[in-house]
Amino acid sequence: MSTEEEDVANVKVGVKRISNEEAALYDRQIRLWGVDAQNSMRNSAILLIGMHGFNVEVAKNIVLAGVGRVMVLDEETVQAEDLGSSFFLRDYHIGTLRAEATVAGLAELNPRVDLSFEAVSLLEKDPVWFEQFHCVVMCSQYLADLVRWGELHFVVVRSFLFFYSLSLKEPKGLLGLG
Image (cartoon, rainbow, N blue to C red; front, top):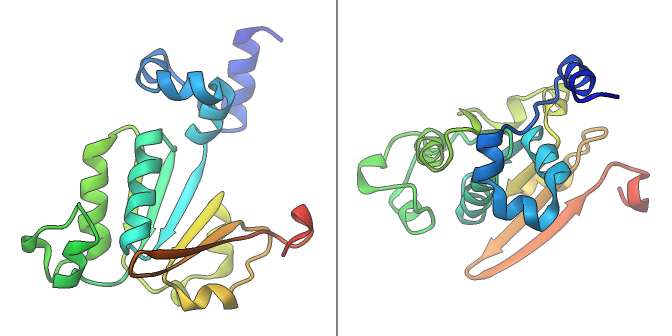
């Protein structure tokens, strides 16, 4: 298959190819894990639920790495205690939506990533809505243990002071987990 035919095939299935500008920007990453992996990241959609300390760090890293789309789901407003766990929040954010303030900070890191947020409860979402994401990262969500959304992969992070517990929830049957 010629390069032109590959490009046409990729457009048909919604795959975005890395541009020369992106290849230059992500050069170190491409040398580390290859152009195919970077292209997979470019075409990935990640949902972050709860913008607490750990998820803020995850958000920063995936945005800098060049993930295609990131959605933040967090209904909380910024509290004074949030200022110590998020480098995107300042005093003037207190009382504003935590998701909105965080997404604004993330947008400054990498304008190539499609960033959005919703300030609603996880419980307000229909399970089908989550199928648009390749991975969901939940931080400090007790509901994570109750959730089984079909074929969705998600990471659950619990934190206490400087200690984190991380677990990967796979769809039933994949890797024998679920």
